[in-house]
Image (cartoon, rainbow, N blue to C red; front, side, top):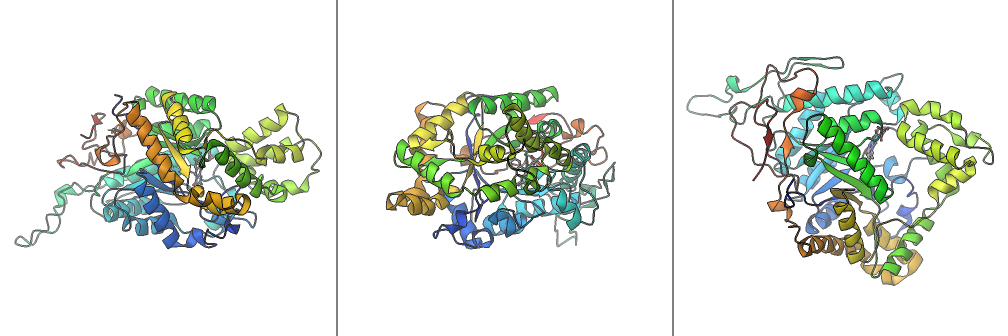
Length: 496
Ligand SMILES: Cc1cc2nc3c(=O)[nH]c(=O)nc-3n(C[C@H](O)[C@H](O)[C@H](O)COP(=O)(O)O)c2cc1C
């Protein structure tokens, strides 16, 4: 990819009243207690992100809670319903919804995303997850959550079917010709007739081809199967990166997996979710960071939340001062296994008790992205240059940080809510300064590949080869501007 084409992407991640490890964010008097279900709060966040030239807003989601779930999880808006509201209150921001392939049907999801794409003028994106909350099964009339192999195989087939359904119509399928009384040109409507292992879907979809044709696909998964799925279908990859080295290793792994599948690695945008703390000065930011981390401290909550990756196994039943109970790993096959394995490995390698494991995971520690806006921008640029990331998913908790900062550090943190605008500006300046041609979103380029039929193993598109004869769509998804496949080929399509 040319230097011009490789541009940093900025994603805003919303956690309302507080996500994992943020059980007390809602105490902040400046955060509405109902932030996670307050559409006005979301609209404000989205507009703030748009003003700061963020590329997209990313809505996380899950289908199962316990009383120990964090506040945002206990009571939050359904992503697609929420994004429909944000679609009409923003103009450029990409709108990315998390939707699970384990507890949905491809027809419903494809229809919703195509609708959001129409409502937003081509800004919809889908974070494909398979769900790690085993308890969700009981909310969807299933006895048991899928194991890893099943859920990722189902996930891949799910995405392929959705993509096939999005090709139900060519762009000119609806002539709406009054003089000829012709609403639909049936030759430009295509059945899918998919018969697969997990899904049998006839199609066509009951919504016309959307502005993007194919909404942008994101994926987040760290297991072998998860990385493979991301390398196969992901245009954006969400991940976590605790250090530059870890970020580089993940980045290299995803890109090489994609290359091995015949994709151009530069067509995949890797975006780790970062906790960013911005202050007036570096020291100020570190103080804010520590204040926030200390405010979140609660051993009992951390002990309960430790259960989530292990399918909400209850660790409160164990002796806190005995070695970490490695046998709990067996529950993780239907949970967040990779995360559980990492925790168990940490405990084993360091010979930790259960108490020490909880403390080790939840204790305050300096993060790489705390500082004055210029410092953080430099750091992001360093990671970008080192190919540890192509973009960042930034928690919108900085606005929330303001109030906690005030609570713990006094009035001088007053301007925090708007520092991420400064940060975004600083990042952009870095890119201009280094003549790396940071290009504002509206002039951005992003390449998409159209190899999906070749990768699926069976040709889902054999009888649709869609969208035949449609003009090349010029699509903007807030920085992930994508010219979509216009035929069932392995050719790469580039937007100018
Ligand atoms: C940055 C990031 C964001 C994620 N967001 C969600 C989410 O919103 N909902 C969800 O069910 N899983 C989410 N996941 C979990 C993954 O999609 C995946 O199911 C989980 O990590 C377990 O699979 P793995 O072992 O392959 O990682 C997220 C993971 C990452 C790394």
